[in-house]
Length: 75
Length: 113
Image 1 (cartoon, rainbow over the protein chains, first blue to last red):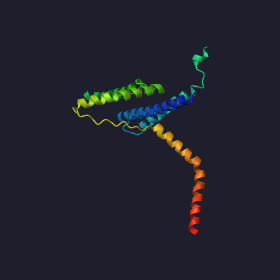
Image 2: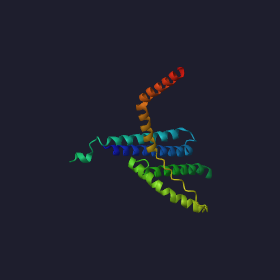
Image 3: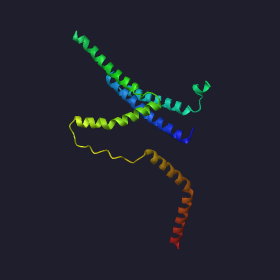
Image 4: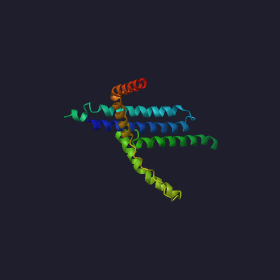
């Protein structure tokens, strides 16, 4: 993995993280207002879930160059 | 009869709104892989100026909003230059410390002459 590609992967990771945390926050706010009487915990749940999804995506992305992918195995 | 239906209607409305929000979030690729997320971000950034134009025309405010000045500030460049400057100052610190100490001692010696 070249330096440039690594930099691009990190950029994608951070942008993706911001998007997912924001989406989780938004969905948490919607759920909290609609169903859970304006408690705080759905908001924290949503943003935490977003953070977790972003972490998993980033991990997969950064590891993908060290793993053998199915398309290469079939050769 | 209506009293029994009303909570049901409220619940149905709430479920529709929540379900719609969830559907939009999943459908636009916000919750997918990193590439999908950045794609959605690009689409959103490209779609904002026309949307703002539409809203301005709708409200009848024909005056040109002062265009947001294109800030030439790149966080990446700022961060990189910050890192370079701090590391270079750290690496020159011993030399600078010795120089300033000598200068200080020289000054004191000159005072006592």
